[in-house]
Image 1 (cartoon, rainbow, N blue to C red):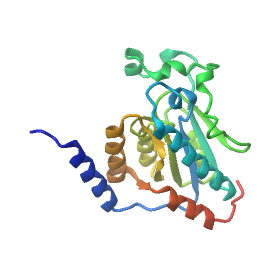
Image 2 (cartoon, rainbow, N blue to C red):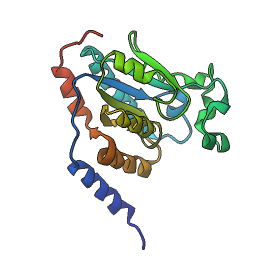
Image 3 (tube, rainbow, N blue to C red):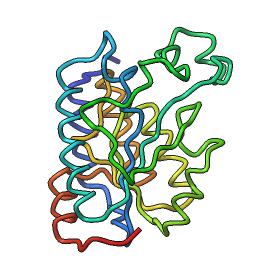
Length: 216
């Protein structure tokens, strides 16, 4: 049977919109996944990357103004053998993520600010062998508002591990990037179906505007 991928994409977008929402938490944090030069300036990106970065910067400014903590997850490798087997076996952008390599720098379009938290990781998920969860628990965070790249890779992996820990999850569609568009759409549906919520930037900005700054 021949699959009409345009029809399939329209179908999953409709199902995603109709799927029951989990809803937000009481104390959110914004999590920016892998918006480093290695993943935002490589040869496969298109114009959508710059748009997602601009949207993310807008959200970050609103989050900081509302007193919402900001976390950056970054891929930093002391040794390329620290990567999972599949990345060691195949060519991967993670080859640019050795500590000290200029490619590991966070994109200048979404620069961290004083008070933001930076968590180093060696695999897709921000929770694997890091103190990310400990930092979140210390701040009594119960919701992760997600941005980053790639939607089908490191964002999805971090979402899954957050769901297993019963965090509320809000993936901001306009703030995520993936140069594999079919994988991105399938992942957004999978996230909405199984792990958390996919939300709009407008909804998040409205929430932040209504919040009073919280001491952290």
